[in-house]
Length: 302
Image (cartoon, rainbow, N blue to C red; front, side, top):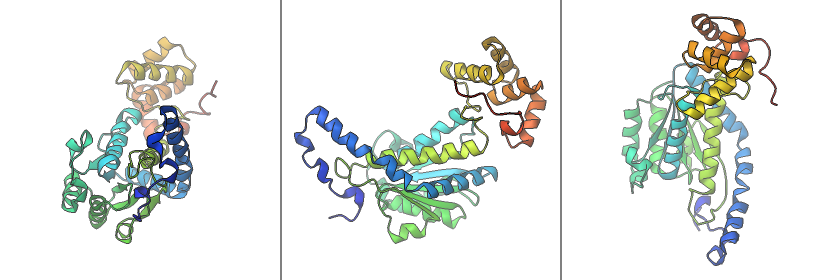
């Protein structure tokens, strides 16, 4: 038996190859139900990661993910979604994946076993003191991830390991924080794209979303730093301004034009009767948080 939880066989799915299509759905769904519960066991560690990410951002640092295979792709995915969702600079959250860009869309065999590649990738990304690097390894044993953590720590960055099986001592020694979400044996033995992958995405989403919220990227639960890069997001921007400021869609559209497309600025401009420069100054003084500038909470959910 392999000591790695993610490599062990799952007795509940031992005869899944005899199951009907609907029985397969039921078996997989039954296993998936436990993922969120497993993530909840790491609530304090995840909260600390949010605080560390926020601290890095406020001090001019960045958040990096380092992983291989599914773990690496999930890191790249989360990093890629931060700019359009929260209006953040694309360099603020970055994904480092074994095998480089080609590994995002296809498997690069053997890349996860190359610690020299990890060290080179961390250096190429410019990881430095003040940054925060999270290594992602479902099995907890990926050589690429351990080497990335060691290199990041050596240059003065904070480090954390996110795993779904207890990492070995060498990996833990390279991490200032361990987030270990035990999701148990996979439906298909060793296929960590399933429960472990789901848990990984939940944790990464929570860390970056939490950090962005604490930076003032939301007003209540409204996405006020959204970048209106398509018709759906343009519509969302107009709806947010119209709802928060109790104005018509046409008025919301007009103030958004004056704000340069910034929902956050448009809200402050409309609510306080300020021009764009004055609204920007007030927000900067308040650390970017609308609640510290505009009196009262956002409107209640209808």
